[in-house]
Image (cartoon, rainbow, N blue to C red; front, side, top):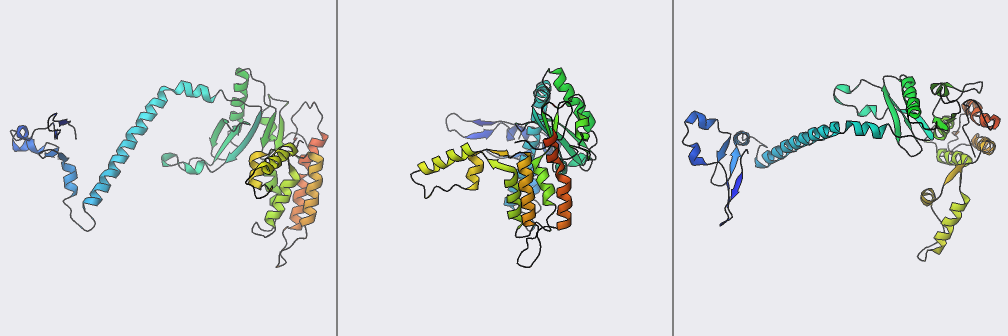
Length: 341
């Protein structure tokens, strides 16, 4: 409360540095300006005492204690944030250098609304999308906040290409996107046009978004056969590394306390790598999966797939695998090579 607590070296009692006898020598008007009430050993702020004057229902000492703890917590948090902000601004050049020194050879560009929904205060409602580019290590290279999806991407792409050029780094090899990877005629799409200074950049459709496009052909995600259909779709695209699976089996068999050599899907995902099967094999397996589930129904005779819609979706999405079959080994332009074994 603006003073120190002194401890007697003999009796170890603690007393406030303020002296009541000295304060009482002042006139009454000046004593009223003193911010604390003094006792023999302790002192209390007059603002705290004023909180105890309103003795109504629910206004007791426990409530006052909770009120003081909350106010002091907010005050300390405000002090901590302001100190952290000043310390951050002192390292601004270092932070900018560390952020702009992140590169990668495999990039992914995507947009989301989840981060924008967390904006609060005066910035809430001022933006709709956040588009970012990350590398194969999960690091974010650059991002931009826009009022609509697609706006501002040209400046973001130019800034990223300029960063690679100024750092004398080799351009990335692959860019994964969720749309605009190619046009209907098979040529490079809008995503490749953003990175015109990287003519050898391969633009591919992200597999997760490809699976979402196929899942749009189901009648309802609550259908009992929906999980089986999605597992078959994933198995048609990915395959486990046989060497990793063999090692996992040997490790399970070597366990003395095991009940069996069966390994779960969680253990497979934790210890084994996956890879794509390749364009031709994937197209064949996906066609078989779609045909197998085309007439599947549940116990109430409700079909899993909307036949007309699923056939149209599959016809439109097959081009993403046809492009890689036609791709030349040394392509001079960005092509939609969405799948690679």
